Length: 350
Image 1 (tube, rainbow, N blue to C red):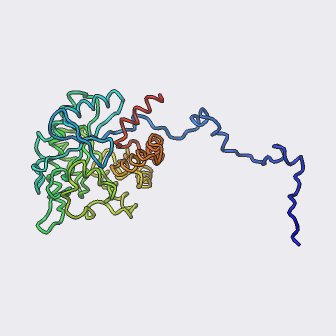
Image 2 (cartoon, rainbow, N blue to C red):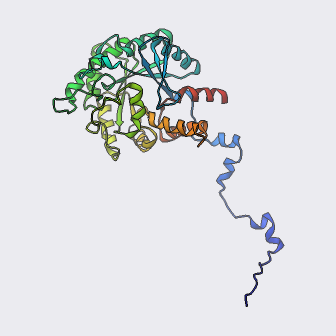
Image 3 (spheres, rainbow, N blue to C red):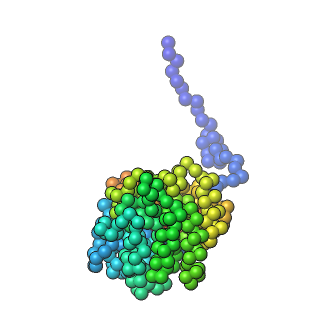
């Protein structure tokens, strides 16, 4: 015969709040009880000064072309890029990073269009400087937007990416960009010795104030796909970039790369991609204390944007959370395609 279950009666004194209260000296939730309290104890704050806006430029005038794999991002003609730079200035965004969509007819094995003083980037630099001289302009030094094979450097007859020969070309590319008005030269090619060679060349040409933002820890990553669509290199890339970009399994190697770049004259360091490599951002900042930036790359942007457009997450909150993660890791600023939207949100919340 089954014995019926009878719940044990709870004494009235145990039902009171006082009787069930834990004897705790520390209650961290006190500092989370209200928005004003959370603001007072917040360890990191995202501001518009943390934002760098990457912009893609293309030939033509008064035109924009959407990048299919980056919803909400467009290629802009030079005049449109100048107009958007005015928007950046109004929003308080301190700097813009420029990347070209080079006409396939101008792509060659040696990437010679990179050395043309009237190429897309140089025209954009002059137009934006004439429009908003106080917005900083960052230019990418690498050959992949200009080569017919899609690599960041010159190739040997057997398909190897040549280091020293490529650096000689990168020097000329950096000088052409500095002459056109670039404030910050950002070598992203990952060739050995290029920072020192570019620094010597810039100084020798009188560009003593041109800063170098070294892509010291640029990883061979699957997150670059949409960017390659945007600059037109995805269809022509032969092979991969693992012989010069870093192995995603390596962390300590990033410290060595950064140390070499600092020794060669880098003013600032870059980690790319961003969110999957926050540990690298932290280690570089803690080790060297140099201004350290991260690139929230196209794949990161596309994932958040696609999920938001499908209603799978709150896009605005995800944008903000992803960027505060960079600040928490120690980044001084972030290159992000969300920059103008984030700046508008921050101004609204004022």
